[in-house]
Length: 161
Image (tube, rainbow, N blue to C red):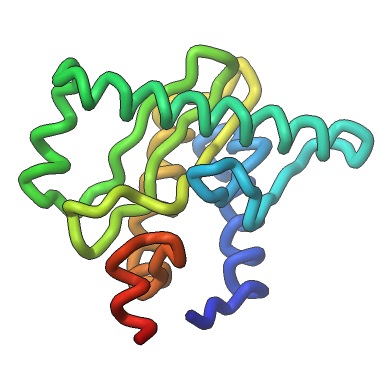
């Protein structure tokens, strides 16, 4: 898989500015479902940026895992939209801070996502703006990561033979 990383960094940086909508997100992360940060963009001061990114990544993974647990218990109404193959990013708010987490949709809707988008902003930020930015980015990245397969999955092992 080939990904144009400078293009992705530019895209992330452009989404940090809120424009006419007021202040935008202060941190945007692309991370694996295990919490490994692939790309980060932040307007936070350099002294606190690393700690902020690590905290948001941990919150994002915990939020995603909690959403999956609720899904397994059939308590998540969004489960039906996942099973019906809607091509939308599914996500939710973290219980800690202003962090919205959503998955990057997979081409095969039966497969669990491998990557997440986490978007965080200050307390005074428009929460709809955060959610909109996260979902827009996830849907934009979906075709880019469509060919990515999890090396540990049984289906990707078949393709390597």
